[in-house]
Image 1 (cartoon, rainbow, N blue to C red):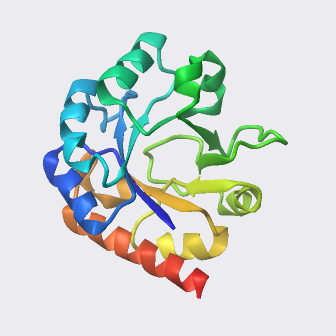
Image 2 (cartoon, one colour):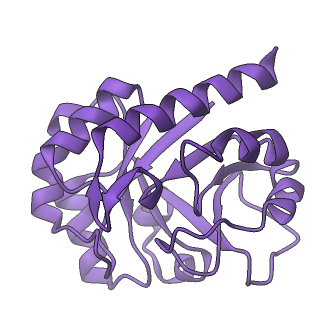
Length: 198
């Protein structure tokens, strides 16, 4: 029962995620409307330390970028595509949360935990839930891609993931989070996870 709110860029959305009871908050360091500097993310994350997992989101990062993230932001997890893992330092690999995409070849051997989403991040399109369900039976799967307060219950019932990840689904406009939508999403996800455990 793990809920992550991703793509935060201001104090209000961080506060809303914490108040709503999110288990993790993510900051995007890859090119995106949600991209933020490492220094700004390190400042915003301070109220969340010890209250929620702090996740750095990258895609094809340079070694210098990874070093800066580890030194300045000090994430609990470093989220990046599975194809990036081989280029990461051992220190970075220890914190890696690999991203698996529905349009990629899925290896026979899966990591203990992964994030699954559609072909492109941040598009608001749902991932292939049927494929996600087969993977969630084999590992701890964090489901992302097009989730919002209206469909997260169905997603949890169909996929039975370890957790869910939302970004565009709690925005009032691209890159701008809505505190109300964050609260609605976390509440809906918690209720759906609760039904599964009954």
